[in-house]
Length: 492
Image (tube, rainbow, N blue to C red; front, side, top):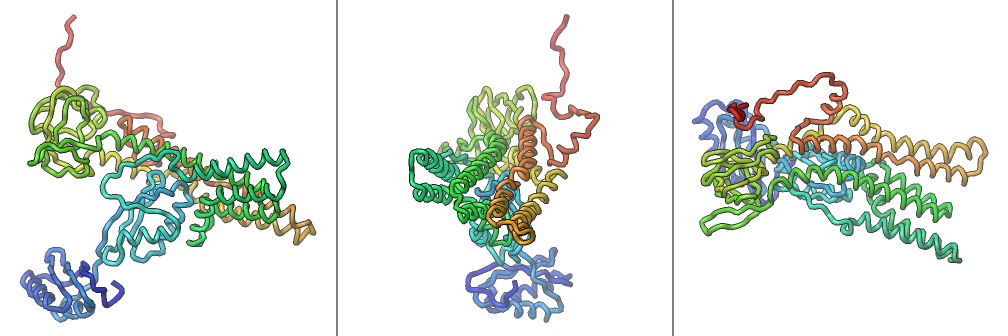
């Protein structure tokens, strides 16, 4: 910790102790530290040379270090880290990824983090004795991003279109623009038309302006900033109709991009939905149906004929045939009896089974497959790395180019300012890069997820890219035979 004193709540803290090589000495040191004011508990892990403390009050950490040094050892505060996973619903484009990158990079207590745009997941390793998951959520809220802490394997809930504010705002903006455009031909006064177009700009530009402001808070520029500047410029020039059309077309493009990404994410959702969300469990109080996330090790799960098996486990009672093709790819059902292993997402066919749980839902074979697919998305192909780099450089370059178009002709060639300002706005309008940056990860995600649904695990875009130059493919059928015992089936 950076401060010598800590607040009144109890916290956990650890020290690495160099030079401790005597078990008896470590016990004596532990006993002496327990006598220090503010130390609620102390435990030395002799094998790991580590001291774990629970301290409260205005505990003086220097006093603890001095106590250790009086025994002839040196103490260095160890970083106590935790890993948390968050879902960021607004993360639909590389612009939001850059905002998250810039924000978290400035937090000193973040040890490491990984962003997965396609699954909207943020994995953060942080110093848990200094900040909490709530602090990370609050930091992202400062840049207008809503992060939700994920516990276990989250099942994505797909929102209906009327629950998507981007679609609602797009419809309102487009409706006002179209209605005003028609009424103009019927004699609508210019002042009222300008007000209506301005209202359409405000409604349609709400989400882009929000994202652009978030980028500016972390000293970054993105495509949303381009749109806001272009819309403001259109208003300054009195081009309200053009400004409203610009905002509508941009917002329409953003919604279509979100739709394309969500369709690709649907492949991950399909994998998650292979296993049921509820399970019938036999407890002391009888048979109860509970979410699979609440199932404990050694629970007895009852699976009736025709139902999917919810967890990995071992058959405790009953016998049946099980279709394991969703997990193993085996084409024939397999007979299962007492003592045999079964997997989540496989289908029980004939008899009822009682299954003893051997793995929690988050540790099941299916969860590992989903994790592999999500991890594969973070291994970027060279084209994808180029796309990300291009997106970071492109927006500032286009800003600079638009500024040059607006300023250089009037200043150096005596040209009128207004038409060149208009041309500079045109440059901003046509310079949307989001689709370019998104095209590669969306394609990679779709390919990886579709392959996973067909029993093929690809460990990243880099390997998909390499397939383009493959000349020969060798297949090994080991492990896919259901029984592996040849038998006579026909005699001619």
